Image (cartoon, rainbow, N blue to C red):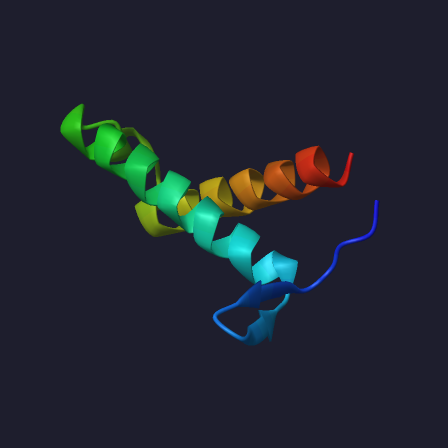
Length: 67
């Protein structure tokens, strides 16, 4: 499947930028859940862990959409 630019209020944006925003929203929501249950205290480097979760969510979204 080919990705095409998205017309957002007259400005063409790359589809990866929209997927990055969606992945960021999912990551923020999952981080809030992890903070609520105090799960981030079990990881060695919380910021690196959250970044890796973001990369996993973004790559999963790209693979699902490109399929």
